Image (cartoon, rainbow, N blue to C red; front, side):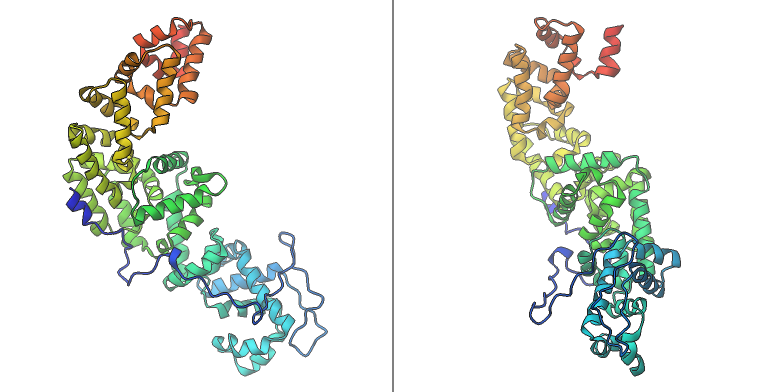
Amino acid sequence: MATAAATFGLLRPPTRTPAISQLYILPLPTQPHSKTHPRPLPLPRRRRGGPIAAFPNATSSSTNASASPTYDVREAEAAVAELLREGGASPADAAAIATRAPAYAAMLADGVRELDELGLWASWSSGAGARLSLSGAVEMEVGRLGFRRKVYLMGRSRRDHGVVPLLESLGVRLSSAKLIAPYVAAAGLTVLIDRVKFLKEMLFSSSDYAILIGRNAKRMMIHLSIPADDALQSTLSFFEKMEARYGGISMLGHGDVSFPYLIESFPMLLLCSEDNHLKPLVDFLEHIGIPKTKIASVLLLFPPIILSDVENDIKPRIREWEKAGMEQDYIGRMLLKYPWILSTSVIENYSQMLLFFNRKKISSTVLGIAVKSWPHILGCSSKRMNSALELFHDLGISKKMVVPVITSSPQLLLRKPDQFMQNVLLFREMGVDKKTTGKILCRAPEIFASNVDSTLKKKIDFLINFGVSKHHLPRIIRKYPELLLLDINRTLLPRLQY
């Protein structure tokens, strides 16, 4: 198993072009020196939808110095929309993108203002303007043009083909959009617009599981205690970006919030062909048993899957789980609960877990059963599992008795010692001795996976408030510990009222 797992490569993008460096190691643009390239003055603040006020001292390179230019945000947006239409975008798409790309329009307007102030249109025409194939007569008259036309020419000179405003309209920061654009611009503006729509539909069309996606992401992050490979590390970096904003990782399933960070973290998603890659990927995930409505959950929890080749990356990993004794139906369920099973780190850790169970003289069958029901333990190190087993032993649980505990509640292997001891101390405070606490653990291990404050104490307080004596409560718990697993409103209260 370990040998096979070690042969896996990193999750690769589907393109067969030469490898492109990841975004986070791209060289930063060279910053011009302040003495040789003085920073332009910022555009004045404006009210939303209102014009950018004219600078009273601004002058044009035109001979008509009495004409003072005005800087209107609507004119700048109209110029950006014209650039997008020229790149192939429909009028509706162009208008929508231009409206949602104010920083890009402001950047172009700022360039226009600087050239107006310094009277450098002639120099610009012979440099950047020359790349636009402007005629000599036009070069001399650029300074006389209206603000909108100047912004348009400034945008054409940047040669980003409308990709930067498209990315900004998605919520990507302008600085990141300018870094990403050169890597994806070759696909073409119209292709990228359609691809963005397809990706958003694929990942965020259903909001039914948005809350569950966020909860599972947080659980996966908390319980990971093994070294992460590159694909897993990039996923954790994406999650950390989400965690740093308002709402945190719980907003992962909400497209307006998470999609910009997804594109910033995995810009090569924009190079994935819909027909040749994305649709076959969705079809394959459905084939292995993942409902179409839940495919987005798998992809958002481990985005490198989207960049993976089905034949060369995903299927080999699934075959390894089959060799480990996992039926394909269970693999689909495991993938839905814990998409990181396709990570090389997790696959290799399963081999280490088998060795650990062998050293503890616990059957590997026990591990197989535990993994099928709670695959999150695949990200658990043997050191943490050993700490859990030592706590079981301290309560008098033998190796034979530990088997039903692990198979019934494998999540106990993920509990930190201080969390587990909170449950033990709760029973001690109730007057339950260590030996009896161990028996309760064997009979109802789920109790020790429950939160003390938000679950167990609330149920105990409910029983006391209902009239159960504190003196008799320990005896009741010893005889029927499953009482602490019942839901208060749906089970306990109706039964006691009856």
